[in-house]
Length: 385
Image (cartoon, rainbow, N blue to C red; front, side, top):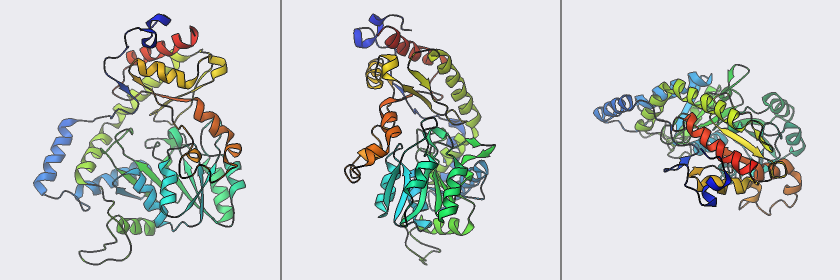
């Protein structure tokens, strides 16, 4: 536990952690159960191509997401890509700039034009009032991001989509096991893309899924993820290889069984951060999704007298791998930077958050004692300048 400025590693002290404490270190369920499933897969000699483990995982994801259809794919980015293609998006798509750049890349890859929107300063999710101003005759869809698992203003976006006859798609990569008004977050919109990347609360090593209530869309997605094949040698349309493997689905099923334990660890850690950072000037702990899978703080440099970037340096010296998500906003990354000269002026909240947001380690690899040490580092850095 750090108590003095001189204790900090950047001032010559010993790092608090011998091994790096990462944001998003993978949760791991029962090894025995996973190995049992993996052994059964090897016994069946069915390793990919829509085997029974993938189908079981899809049923479990659909049930947890409150939808009749979940189509498993190899990763969350491909889930977004197939959703865009399956819904026939064209022209422009409105999305927040304050998100992981893969969302914009998916649109660019498909020849769509990403139109970057600002976010609500409190929720960090797309601001419907700003989105409404960006609709043009070329707009085909709104892509909302449930950032940190915090649901978008679903009703506000639905009204815009209804009024302008737009598709409404959600990037729910952060939002598995999160709810809005008692309903699973992935149940909203024409489609919602999930990620089961290693860093997510439930991982399948690497994987994703598209959740939808539309049976025709689900059928198209199943063809598209398998190179358009509808049978052994019958191709019904353009597709690619986006299938999830059986062993990935086995990991996903195993981790789903341990979800209550993962949730409890997140909630315990979140409460510990709230206590440890409470009252610090210039530090605001952001309300995240009901899974509490993310611990997110805003650092106000003027009030704290320490910049977010300086805090990152201090924490990394202690072997705490805090992250500055999402820095910079998508509009500042190639190939988007410079395309829209007015983007910076149009995205003031995104610009501010990109300089203030600090994401801290949580999950089953982090204990409340670890959290107490992390908080002590931040407290010393701020209180002792």
